[in-house]
Image 1 (cartoon, rainbow, N blue to C red):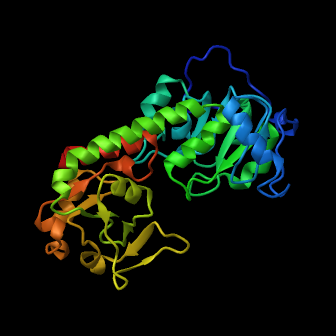
Image 2: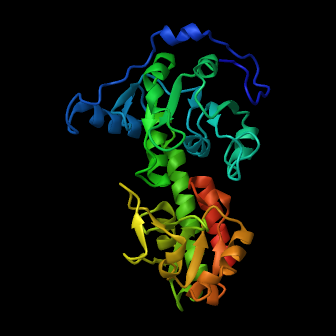
Image 3: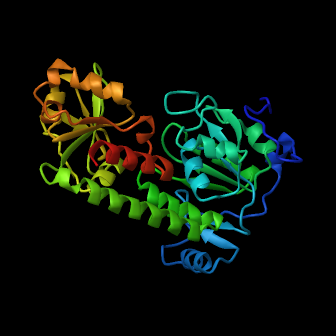
Length: 344
């Protein structure tokens, strides 16, 4: 594997570690996930340490509690999704994994909603796609963060990564971006910053809700989907991140009739709907399209099979941008702005 980085920016002297560092011990220790019940000391210590800002501290992860000896100063993220949260928390992020370039990323494979922030902070793109242990080792991190779910997961590499540096595993599939922000803030000592972010966003949502309330007084129902015609589309339920945001803004997220679609296995946030059933599923007075631009909204409105849906007849179909598919602090703010522009 090559140690060549996809982006290199001036950062002063760079410490390059040999791949042999994989065999070195780490200065922080991971506690087994089966060390006891939720009433055991590690959880209590974690809460106490976090509130007082003291180290060492024990933090909860998807892989069990982990004890960190000191506040991290050089973090590597193997999940481009988790990278956005670290940036929002002003964490000392040195390097990150990236995706192959697509509509939701810039040319380096970083999500567009925060790619400029990463550039301003000289964050290195260590690799795209499959994890590069050599590049991660060369970055000499004192903390590595890993996703346990979705396409950017490196869960199967945790054992090796833990030989490079303490490794924290997070599952973002079962929690809101706000909950994830709070959880990760504890690990990097950014609890105050997390509070600021969440309060800032809450105030923005409240202001937007007040601004669009006259429109919603007439019809507050909304359908949220990814419009994938001629393939199956995905309808977002009120349990999805996008659905929860819409609810907070004053919308009522419509349910999909049982004869129109089926929930994905093990998931309650999305429902797959075939093209021929889409008109039955889009019952909201407003339709929001996720991972879409205005031309995608125009394409939906021009779909003859959807001509009789209420939102099409009322010309109330809006695209929420490519970054609306995966919500974090940055993209959630962008989505609120777009909804406000559309309805406010």
